[in-house]
View 1 (cartoon, rainbow, N blue to C red):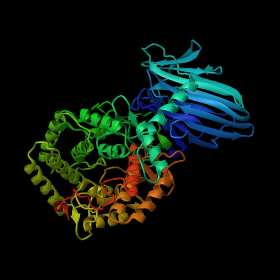
View 2: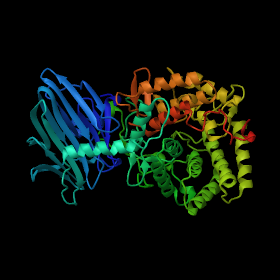
View 3: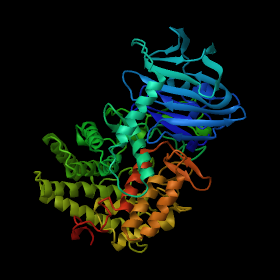
View 4: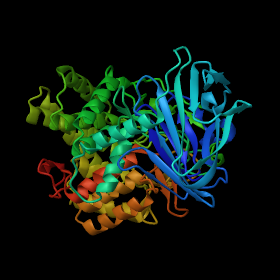
Length: 605
C-alpha cells in the first residue's frame, strides 16, 4: 500500500500503522524505538502483521477517526452487508493493549483474521501456544497474549479465525504485550478500553486554545503531535517509523524514532501557541535533561529517555518498503557536528523563558556553558541541519542559528535579568551577522546561498526572519524567497535543497521528494513579506496533501501524488500548526506586524 494509505494508532508509548485493507503492518513494542513485532511495512506478511477484514478481502469503503480521537473506524460495504472494525490503543497502564472490535452494521458478513507475530523486527518466530484461554507468544524478552471472542486456530506460529457477524453483533480481540519475565497481564475489556481511549482524547483536545481558520486541520495535527510524545519523559519522536524512503527504490531511508533537538523551538511554538503549557514544559524538561553535560558533547538527537548511544545498522532480512533498501535501525547522524543545534537549544530555552516556563538556576549555567562552546566553534564547518553525509561546509543556516544563540543570550540578560558577559555576546552576535552577510549572500543573484560560495540554495534560509536575523521585509530576504521559489520549487512544493547542486552536497545518490515542513516555511515567508494571498494558496495545497485521516509524512512527490518518507512526521504537523497560526494572526513572528518590535536596526534594517 501507499504510505498515505496507513492510519496511526498510539498510546503515548508507541504507535501502530493500520492499512486501508485492515492490516496492522507496523508496531514496535513496548516503545517507539523498540524492535517491531509487526514489520510487514518493510517486508511482507512473513515479517509480521495482523489482518482483520471481510472474507472477500479488499480495501475498505471508508474510514475515519472517531471525532477528535485516535480511535480508527474502518468500514466495508460488501454484497453480504456492511461491517465496521474499530481499532484503538488505550492509554497505557502497566501493559500495552491493542484493541480491535468487529461490529455488524447490516446483513451478515463473513470475516477472517490472521495474526503473525514476529519479534526482533520481523525475524524471530515466537513460541506460541494456548494458555488460560488465550494465545500466548514468547520469544526471549518479549511476550504477548491475544484474547478473542471467537476460537483461534494455530498453525505455523500463526493464529487464524473465520467467523461471521450480523447486524448488532460485536466480536472483540485484544493483544496485550508485557516483558516475558513479568507476570501475565490481565487484558483490558475491549469496550472499556475504547471508551477510556475516547475519554482521554476528548479531555485532552478540550484544552486546545486556537482561534483561527483551519480548526479541523490544527486539531488533528495537535493530536498527532501528542501521539508522537513518549509520555514517561515528554520526548517527541520525529516519526513513528524507520526507513520509509524519501526516494522509492533508493537508499535515502532513515530511522526517525528518536528526538531531534532542532525540533524543540518549532514544537514549543506549536504547544505554547495552542495552550498546551504542560506538554511544552515536559518537552522543555526533556530537552534540559538530554543536553546536560559537556556542551562539546551535544548531539543533534537523543533517544526517548535522553539516551545518547544510537548506533546505526542495517536489517538485511528486510527488503524495505517497495524494495527501498537498506532498512536502517539507529541513526549515524547522531554523532555528526551540526552547529545549528546549539542555537536551536538556546532559542528554544529562551522561548520557554519568554512564555513563563521557569527553570532552575542550573539551566542558565548550562546555557552559559553552551555559549562558551559556541564562542569557540561557531566559525567551524559542519554537516548542516539536513545531516548531509558529504564534506563539512560553512552552511549559512548553521551560522544564522549561531547568531540566534548569542542574540537570545543578550536578550536573556536585558529582558530577564540573567547574568553574563553581555558585551562579549553582543560583539560575537555582530561578528557572526557581518560574516554571514558578507560571505553567505550572493549580491549578484540577490539571495543567500546554502553555504559560503555555494551556487545552490537551501530552504532553511526561509527561516532567517523567524530567528530575528533580518526583517521579513528586508530586500535580501525577499530576494532569497524569490530565488527559493525559482530554483527549489517542484510543481508548487519546495525541496530542501537541490541534491545535484555544487557537485552533490549530501554525498548520496538519487533524488528525493519535496519536503513538507519546508513548504510550510515558504507559507510563513510569503505571508511575512506581504504576499498573503500566495501564502494562503500554498497552505491550501499543502492541506490537500494530507491523507483521508489528516496525516502527513515527511515528503511528497507531486509527480506521482504520493507521500514519501517516515510517517506520520512531527515536523510536518508542527509546520501545519504554526503556519495556520501565522495566517490566522495568532503567531507573534509574523502577526499582525511583518516586522517584530524586538528586531533592532543592527539586524539588517
